[in-house]
Length: 138
Image 1: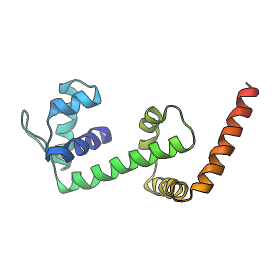
Image 2: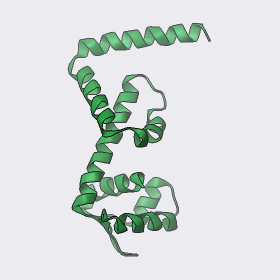
Image 3: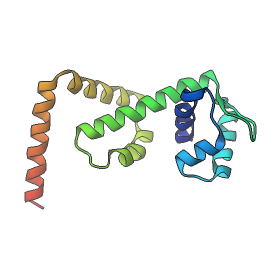
């Protein structure tokens, strides 16, 4: 359900609204599946939506959608930082299981490395050394 709300949020940022077809296309699901999930989100007051009409987020949906999008970016940035080669796929698998506290801590860690280039270089050198060691022992 979070993926649908996050995608609706992303798409609504462009025009202020989106449509079922656009969400189903972006999430690679059938329109009927998207429609069913969007109806559930409407019941939970995250969006306004009538079949065959445009979809608009409520203030509750905006707030959660913004958090979900930020969480996604934080997790993806962290996975890239540690050298994950499948960061997008792993982000999708991991992001839903993290508490807000853990997301906040990951965010601070990523921000630290982004603001302290020297520490980031040291960490990358350490990571590369570790990865080379793993390859030799495989």
